[in-house]
Length: 410
Image (cartoon, rainbow, N blue to C red; front, top):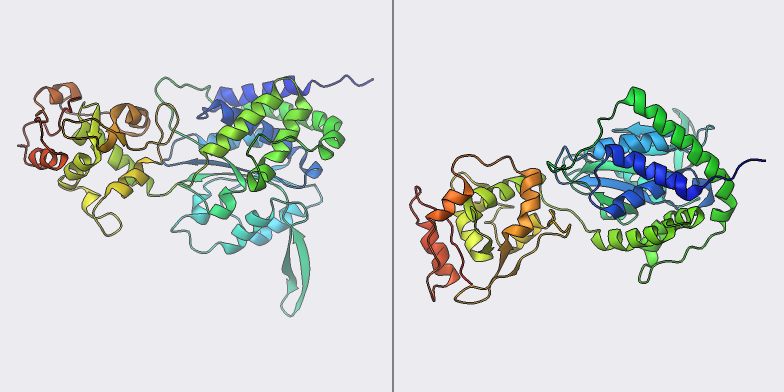
């Protein structure tokens, strides 16, 4: 008699394998990626498949490593940096079975300088649901005939910035970040660790075979408020969690709610974002705990050799500032947003240093020159009754050898 496989314990091992080599931004991300690995082994049981998207605003955030680990755990994994639509269709139609396609540097396919990739985009858009096919010509010269090619398969992607909305809305999105100094991982050595991943992959395949029929007939209960396309994305992952049992159904639904809520489009240029973060830390805040938006803009626009006077053909404004900072997150893993600041003259919107510290640590080079602490010692105070505009004007004309930011009272 074949011994029963403990699905929950097996998923625990898969999650632990990811944790050895990947630093994901949230616990929800570990849950989602683990379930996605398992769902790839059950692709024939589902009517749809979720795309998995590892995205970040900057290089060096662990996206490619995440794909490498996924590659070891999924069936018939095929990694590509670029591929034609025709090659992808033929790979899906191969006799060996449906592949798990892993696209690294997906921004080179869909980025602003990538040119037209409408056929690949069409493949990714259509291939999330069973039965999706595209009509292609086959043959040589005048001896061509039309043939249907399937595109349904599991796809994971990694890239900078964002992706087209048509793909994002069909994806579980993991917003990767640079590792903080206190975040460490085990060095990945393919010759050693790939075998360990493959051993887990084979056990996942064995377990998947035992729950295939159960999963194929499942209609997992969605968390409250999860409907339409997000429900389509998460249905196969929740079905896997329910089949595994133990703590996985609860963890899966909590992750579902968290990641759907966190999903948003990323815009703006990443390098411009790092320049903004660095200028805010070294030339605007300089140790202050908060800053009104109007003061920030005045000080940024006054900087020599800075790009802030011409962002998208116009000076940086409050809306652009919010959009640039919104692609990064606070220590609580929420998008950086302006908040109210109490000053002697009112309650303007602005930004708090505590919201920016995590992004400063992860993305900015170490500060050089005079420390932030010494810079604040000679900082001019906001005078009683002075408006934000007056504060900004006065700071703009502060001599270069002096401090260039206010300490706000209140």
